[in-house]
Length: 284
Image (cartoon, rainbow, N blue to C red):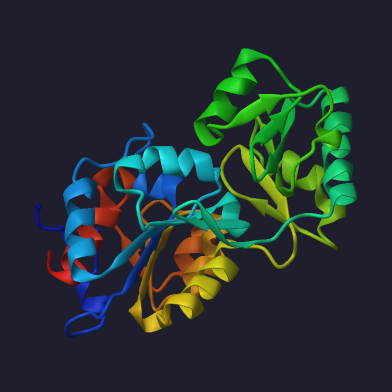
């Protein structure tokens, strides 16, 4: 693996001595994946070596469990998937934790998005259940965005009446979500989390749900400490997760708040920053 240029990884800022890392958790989009949404080829041999060393590697994403499982299908056995921004955590098909929304609240969120669209905003809601994601909007441009993150999705007449346990309502906007979708959902902020999870996505979840809460629960279950945990992220939905690890890395080019919150800076997602940092810290 190539050496990491000093400007991209400040090795002097890293703790000295061998690192006792037992758990590595990484966001996907903008973090592990490059801008073309590709997993670095070097990840697969690295995962084999991490497993040999007893280090658990866990994807943590706003993406659906089914999508994450499909992406890691060849190595999924024993892997913990922190899906749907921490609202659904699964290992080997068994739910480890979840944080479902109240059905009436989820329906109210979907109706708010309907009104926003009726007023001319180019947006659509994705009601995320444990079994599948549900959408009403059926144009190809919107569905193409949905497919990237929700491998199991269904078009329904009414997303407020799905028979599934809803864990999140995600809203896609073709404009900048931080300035368009998020303000429209601000009325839910008093009782729920309204999180900008990407340039075009906003997720609404229970106030107790986030990647950090899911990670802390996983740490307790595994007996792993924050000092034994390495985390990578790039966007606002990664903040609480970064707080749960002493080895916390923001990607070069991450949201400014993420860079402020993380302890360290990793090379960018387009420079295989996650892999290169792991290789340096663990001496792979």
